[in-house]
Length: 605
Image (cartoon, rainbow, N blue to C red):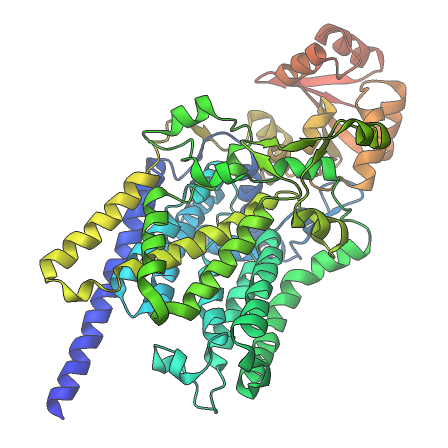
């Protein structure tokens, strides 16, 4: 008895040591794969200013709203002023923001954003580690799968693009951890017996885990949530109606599934209610097919190394069309794919159910990531029509339509999506999970050989995915003009010129510091009615009509940003031949120049 207790205690101690090593491993990987971000955390972001600054604003605004103003952060009264704006108009990411808010108590909102990015990297690896260890009983398998998933070039691309929401991939393996157990809910099918409930085979723990994973995914990305439901739904249909039809009469399975639905409701209500209300009010129109089809993945996207790769990245960028490289970076990895293939063949009947679920998920995710019609190397593949059809249809070629086209046309909410390529993350996750099974049989080797095999597999994956060091960082902070605006007594709003700048993420961010209402906001997904209504008139600023409208909208400050104005004049998007013409017109209409700050002229009424 004492011997058994000692063995259990030794095993628990070993697991605790493993836990710390796993967290340390993924923390080190996060530092290496984002290098040298750790030295720029406080006031810079990797790459250029873009979507990142919008998420930085959200982190700062939520903290200010909750802890300083005591108001609902969803209701942003000072954007799209005076009509106001709801944050649900663009994709919010409450789970990622909550992660970032923790770090606002240790640094700026920029530091919190960078820390949230690193935390997502670590959590993606750690949760995948525990899931695959649960599936296989092997820590080595979990470590390999977690490394593949955390280091994916897909994640690197969205990190550099500043997509905090899409970098929140950590909750997907949490969902599938519970989901896989739900779909193989017989006691004999659960390797880890502590996850088997005692209530006649009802898997309430698995149901709860899947529900939490689903809810947190919905609170991270609406894209991931919608796609997750579709992929998981197809897995369930295949397993229940094709592979394991006996589950149709399995009462414990349906009880477990009912618990999953019940447990999912609270988080889903919080996550989805704002978007459902917005959609019901017509605030989320369907996308245009012409703007959606370009985001269709080709098989080449899964085979090409990322353009950030330290060795092959520049060559890939020079020889292939990577115009939309951020979305098209779906490289599965030669090492990961080889390990996955070996594991699926070697596993035989022992992993039959896992193989069915993984392969089903991969096939569905790849097909749907290919969008509405067939593409290769970012170009649509079209059939040349015979003469009689050319005359009848009035076109010489026809796209090769895929299942995604019909979902886009007929499936509820599917046409709200733009980048179907993002389905690819699910295929990549399942390949990562399956690759771990390649190390499940190494226990028969000596300890030294086991270590060498694990190290070789990890090294192959890391070298296959390793990006070159990031050399470009952009400073984030208020401009001189924002600090000046914060000192001004006027309570009216700010308008930027040229007018298209009012739909720029940076303008939204600057409100954290100038503390003035802003006529604009980040509207590129779904422009507001007010913004669409006033755009043409305000683009002609200064004019009698635009100044009259500005008075109605309570605009006090006009910020003429000279560099952008010169670009707009060159492109012919404003009705002025030179900057001097605009300045003379402003003077003629009685506007006063209140100051000039780093190339920004401030005019007041």
